[in-house]
Length: 331
Picture 1 (cartoon, rainbow, N blue to C red):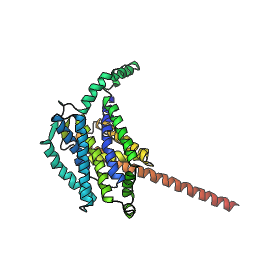
Picture 2: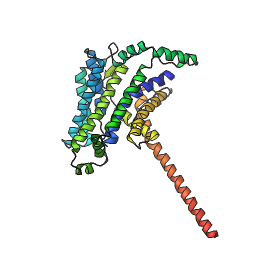
Picture 3: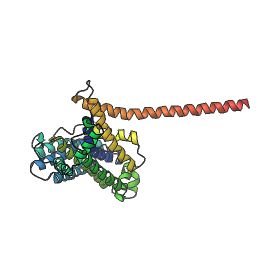
Picture 4: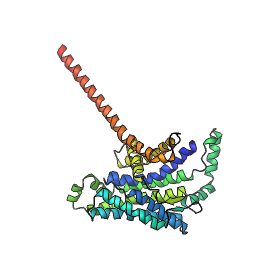
């Protein structure tokens, strides 16, 4: 059980990068970008093909990020210059990327189990430090020998990467360009009245969003040991689930708090899925159903809680009003 949950935290940290990309398009730009389902696979496909052809895995991952940025920019161009509906422009790019991803890989699946990846290289470096051995002895000394993961390299490395991305995104959204992109999502007519180039701001925002998504896809391909043309199906829902769960639990009063919420939401989502799949009733094929139920719950439950709070407030106000009226009548 602990091993499965620990693995969920590992994958949750990787998917958190994708969730931050979805947050950027969905919340900041107010753009329902379905390109995510395609650009996630594009990042995985590009990194996998480059690694198989002998390119350094770190360089391959960065190239995947750049290709994702390009895909997002094309979606932005379709919407702004082609005057295509935001939802439709994302769908068109997602469909186009399916064929492009097949072209990139040359087949539907590219295995990486025998290749050097970011994680295998990090593991080699990590083992030289001897941290895993020290942590294992610590766990055994306190009687938790059955709860020791094989390595902490993935968790700690991805935690550092996601924190760097989080702080960089927080800083960017407070810059002049970042504030302009936020303004486009909040009130496009207002920012247009200030003679801002809203088309370019949307293109850059969508490019950055899909760059993060593709970056996550590249890490997931190396983490799982393969890139598959169908691995991006439903990725937008996973991203939205992470955003919604995090917002419901942590809140969104500031950008710093919102990005933390997204990261926590991504980890919690993976933990919920892992625990649900351990129930005998569910099968691996039920993962999309579980995801849909999680999103529905994350959307409906907060509304029900708010309604109950409103009812209690109204009831208290009514009671106070009745008490005041009765007091005045007695006087």
